[in-house]
Length: 568
Figure (tube, rainbow, N blue to C red):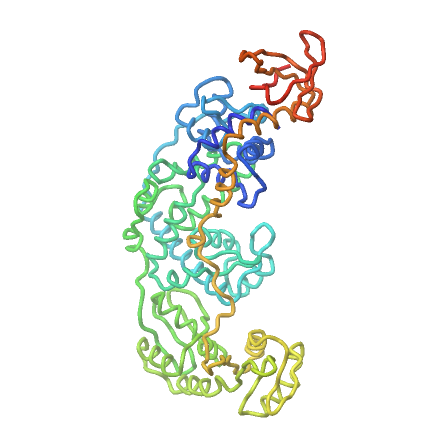
């Protein structure tokens, strides 16, 4: 315990709950940290390891101000921010444990960065095309993640195996990590159990127009930029200055380059570094206006051509809401301004699993088709509807086992000898199959083996199934709740706080064999100051060698009014 922590403990005790929450979040303190009081908090926050973690987060202005304060100068406009991070004391000087960590640190000289240059018409058109492609590819990624979440490495990146799987679909894997980072910042995807899933808010985004999709991505990109890139009005600093925004973060050069690439993918900067018209408002902190961008995007269509070979052709970019629903029924074969889709027994069966019916599918396709419903397609939908639900999966009320039933006994016999279903341990029981495996697992195993399986609830209803539940939206989750921690720290405030702190200081001084300057209250009400080399504490008494008198003294701790370490 260092006596340097006492001023911080006093500041923490006087701070508001909002100030404490800001500090604890900024210093990445876990809600379950084992602190009992503000003394523990102060000691931990001034620990060199904790301080070393926060210094890389400082912006260039904050870092420069901290160096000025360490040199005895005024920290200026950044003083309040540095005090809120528990790096400066209320008087503007750094807490002593901060000083050793500043040795050898410098900040780059402030450079004059010119205002962005407006993009030329060809450059803006190219940026708009790139933004359109980014939105489309990201939508494809989210649709894939909705059906099969991506496995993540320990660092959070998508695994190489997942990228190989995406490459087989024609996905540009070199930008996958950047696109998914954009999606996470927009709250459209989130990691759950080391797998990246589409979030609960992704569904609405997928059904929005391209301009609205872009507006969400661009706004969230700006609003989640690191503090060193943000301006006081809510915008961002000139992009050429981004590499210097966090000078003490060794990973910042790579991170700033990645952010610049994301800005390029979103069409916020042109290839030559110039600024398209739709970017200016975002940079200033205004509401995103996609109107200039939308003028350069290809027009969306709301009709398709259905053909006898079970394919569908969209003569232009299909409206997103229609595209998403159509892809629940058909497999998209090509992704271009004129996309093609193919209907298969598996794709139509997938639509039934997602809650579609024969009537809803035919009504939807009739509403968007310029060529009616071809007979082969109508037959495929009807035949799939007849097969859907042929295998019914429920839970036996008496045994609790999963029960598989079907009016087609030959189909049950086929499942009983199907080697791909062997892990389920299926056994025959009165014209049905049973297993100890949960009905959800059995259901998806049969779906994967392409059996027309349907789950049946206790009431006989057929529920709509989601194999991979959506990840919670980060906006809904919010930050970690620190209220319990703050309440616990405040509960230990009281009249005994000074005495508890003094005990800690004395114990620390004894362990360090430090020299103390103690003020002792005398019986007559006066005080006396002694300089002692602390040697022991116990039984409510402090033992130490009085350097001035060269004698051992024993002082009642209750008589000590204050104690401070004498600098060597």
